[in-house]
Amino acid sequence: MKRGNHMTSPVSGYITDNRNLVGGKGTPNLFFDINNSVLFERDPENIVYLLSSTQMPAMIGGSVAELNMSKGFIREPHWHPNAWELDYLISGSATIGILDPNNNKLQTYKLTKPGETVFIPMGYWHWISADSDDTKLLLFFNNDQFQTQEGSTMLTQTPLPVYEQAYNIEPKKMAAALEPIEGAGAVVIGPPPPLSRKRK
Image (cartoon, rainbow, N blue to C red; front, side, top):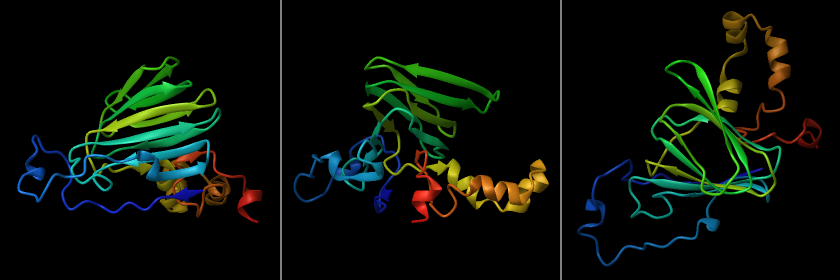
């Protein structure tokens, strides 16, 4: 598992015009190869590429990610506190689950044809699972430095006694359940490697 390093841009968020380009010297670079910016790699078939204002400073107000997964892999449950997301299927097939916080209802969408699109409002808990090999999606965000809260981070960073107090789950049982993801940081594309591989 590899995780890319991405510095934050001094100017970020959303602006309605090109004021970030006015007054600069020369023409800004308006080209970037997203294949040169790995955000996360589980293996060569399960990888996320990112293009944001870190890679292209002129691109204020939006980001794009390319998500590649093989059958049985999942972009772990997460949400974005500062951006909505638009998912566009390029190839393969995928299921997208979204939990609506307004009514606590789960909405599930199956994408089977290139061009099918799902919109995920800001702050909505969601995940993407690959239903076939060679699944590829483009993910668009309306923030050039969007934030992500991963489910695995929430689970592992919550103190074990809290699970007992809130849900009556014994700390030892919860610790055993979390062992596959403990200490690995965010999972991002799951499942994580088996414990037997991680202990070598």
